[in-house]
Length: 234
Image (cartoon, rainbow, N blue to C red; front, top):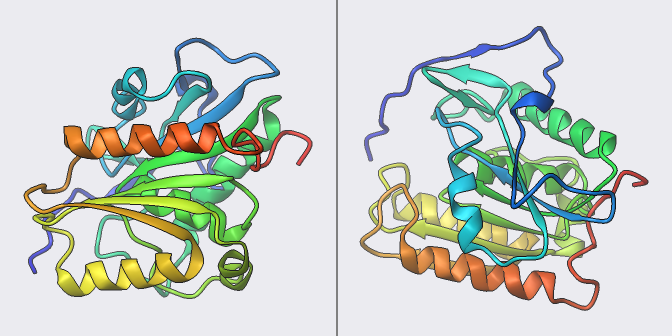
């Protein structure tokens, strides 16, 4: 399996990094204190406007908040270094996770779930591996878990929150062995639902989007309204 080449990442600010509040984008409107928030976490080299384009096709009710990555990558942004990610060095993914955790803690809203693509999917899963109760559920698209055990993995395996994993069979970043590794980890640590599109590459198609919308709708209609994640009060 050949890995595509990506530009290197550089820091936007001195460490520790923080979410740029001015760059956060909301759909369908800025949230109020009583709103539920679903995070949108973009992939490598992308930006906060990217996944926001999916929001009109997702279930109404929550406010979708799209965050910008804390690192620069070419003309876009990132959450960690390009692949292949070094499993012996979690510094960047932990720094990005801490930045998102800090943003959640600073807001008056209740963050219930996250939808992440590629690096954003890895980040969504990492938030749960750091705190199994950080989010009620996640949608992990074309991503994978960070490749080293994490201190919160046992707690996550015990809680097993709902997770949708969507990915393509022609994704150049995944061969069959890599798919099996992701499937095994997510089966052991989450209540996994998988959508595999055999002819899809590293992207999202209409069938996958329909599955995402259905999953998010069910999460929002759950017994607790999808409000099992952390709020400003923790």
